[in-house]
Length: 88
Image 1 (spheres, rainbow, N blue to C red):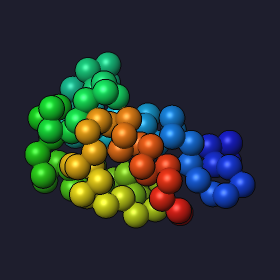
Image 2 (image 1 turned 90 degrees about the vertical axis):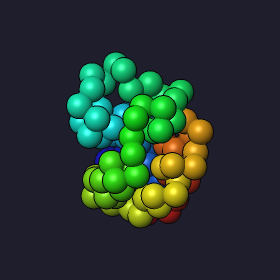
Image 3 (image 1 turned 180 degrees about the vertical axis):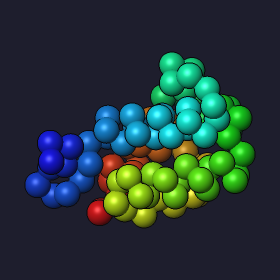
Image 4 (image 1 turned 60 degrees about the vertical axis):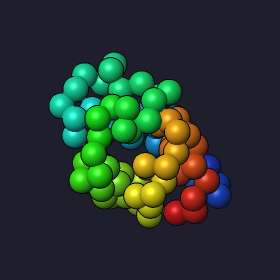
């Protein structure tokens, strides 16, 4: 697919778009309010919602998404960048 390079890593922009879409869906908020430069907690995402986002992201990306990564990284952009480095 065009979203993956030869090493099997997903493009960070693709991961970020997927992450933002899932957060918007889980929180019931417009996508344009889910900014890439904020943390999940700042968007009101609680631990149960974060676990739901992680599980859905795993299903979409086909790779493990550690819950700790979602809650410990300072922004959604940082989460996406870290996920792009995780091998499929």
